Amino acid sequence: MPVRFQIPSGKLVLPEMQQGELVNISYHGILITTDFYLPPLSEIKMKVALEFSGDRTTDIYARIIKSDKRESGYEYGMESRSIDQEAQGAIKRLIDLLLTAA
Image 1 (spheres, rainbow, N blue to C red):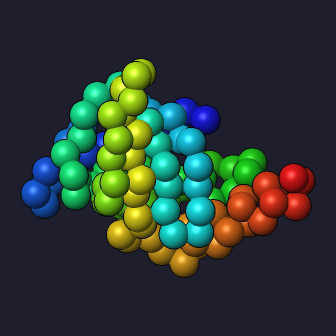
Image 2: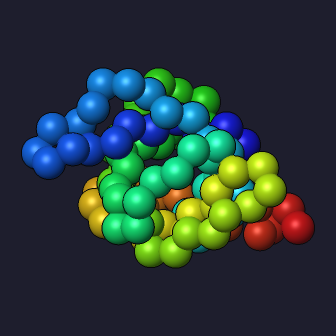
C-alpha cells in the first residue's frame, strides 16, 4: 500500500512529500520500504485517515529503529513516537478488521 510522508528537520517539517510502500503495520509500529536512504533514528511525519470513508486525518510521527538495504531500495522498521488517541483507535480498528478477515 503506498504511503506518503514528510521528513522533519529540527523543529520544522520539510514541505516535500516523500513516497514509500507500507509493508506491515502493528499497534505500535510500521514497516515501510523506499527507494532512497533515510539515516538511523530519522523521523517521518505521515497523515493517517481516521475513518475508512472520510476526510478526517491526523498526523503520526515515527522513528526509524531498524533499516535494511534491499535489492530494490531500503526497508525501515519504525516505532510510533507521537500518535493521538483517535489515530491509535483508527489503527486498532484497521488491524482488527484485517485479522478478522484473515
